[in-house]
View 1 (cartoon, rainbow, N blue to C red):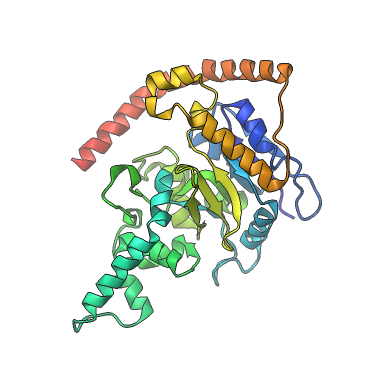
View 2: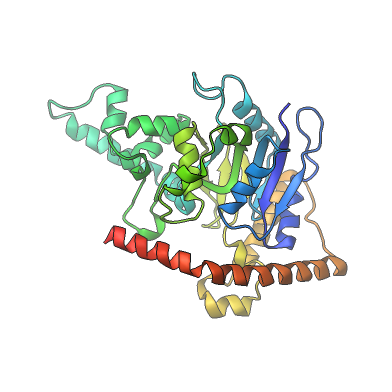
Length: 353
């Protein structure tokens, strides 16, 4: 029986307590309580390397502190699916990684399905008038724009894995498959990358091939964790899960393959415990994030039939001490990382220029 753990990269203890309250105490198929690990003061990529170093864990369930588990049974079913001998695709023992694709712009992949489907139909109609029009479904998939591939497959109700994406993009570098609607803010840079707000990772399989030097050679063009997920997508058959946008216009609804809601991911957790006046001073468009996140927390707990925890004076003192410690560590880390960040930015500008 694989040893399973929950991992969370956490900066805000209050938010972590609210999130972990929805999965702390859950049991695996053998009736054992699944341990919860809060990792603090880790970089966006160092967090995953810390998981790999934990030899007492076989399967890691990574969930952000601003992601709220709504269906434990869907999570258990997904765990069984990923670790089953047959896996998702024939010829693959298992899918050592899963998550929602597309980086922080995940919504553009699924919110615009109908627009892409209509565009694909339009192209088919135009091609139908020529002698070179594709007639078989497999030919149509290869002929359609690479940028639309994942969306069209999701629209067709197919499971999306990195192997299938790679097969559709054999003539192009795998990291160039993406979706762009022309808007910089909603363009998917690389849908092969799974977003780190919710992942299941088979650490045993990843450790068996792990190559840090090969990972360092991969492009880090947007987030520090991109090389890690690029490496897993090209070395394993990553399973991509569907998602949609919440009615609040910002929260991501993460689903399983049956469409059940596994979690709600709010984004912008860094503003959760900041005073509103401070947020409005430096990020005037983000001043209402705490109210929105609190509403999602209430919804997630209601979906589970649970009461939102109430914290007392002692809890609030602990939260304040923890937050002070986090900032005392984070500020020097940020300052130390500035030269590397500037160098990466200059490299990106030179590559794009």
